[in-house]
Length: 62
Image: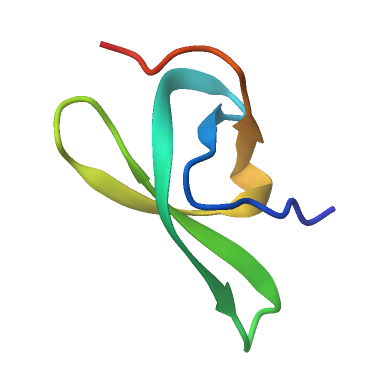
């Protein structure tokens, strides 16, 4: 199931981990899934498939 994420969503990984902020999204046209760029409190950003992320109402991890 593909999750539709938007810039500004707070997310964490399906296996847990720190809460990050979605700062960019893109559609991977060849593989047909959405990817989200997630920024964490330590200043690093990483791309994830949207299926690997869960939207949350929790505050960002510090």
